[in-house]
Length: 96
Image (tube, rainbow, N blue to C red; front, side):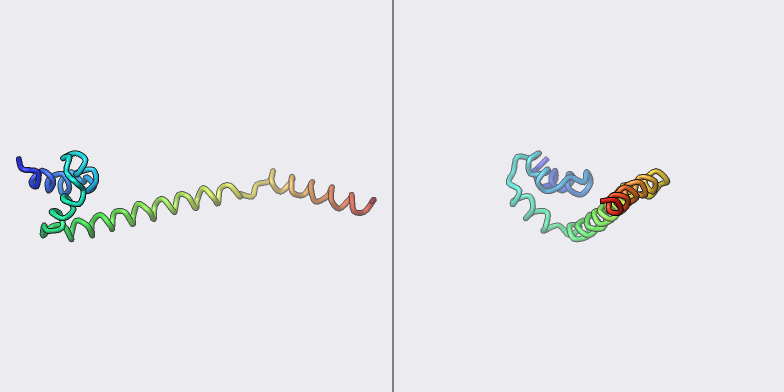
């Protein structure tokens, strides 16, 4: 099987990246990229991958934001601790 057919199969059907295809076939990334860009399906595959990447990024950001919000969660324990610290500061100012 010629490298071009194999590159097309790996990129479009297996979902490998251009660099991975080039490493697998032991051909320069520029050669593989130039060939893939000449394919009629290339543009639609790029758009599909961009959309999938955007969805993955959006999900990642959503999870990270949830983690950040959970770090600053206000509980009864945090309120009590904050109150105790404020009381110590105020009593120190009052007596010193």
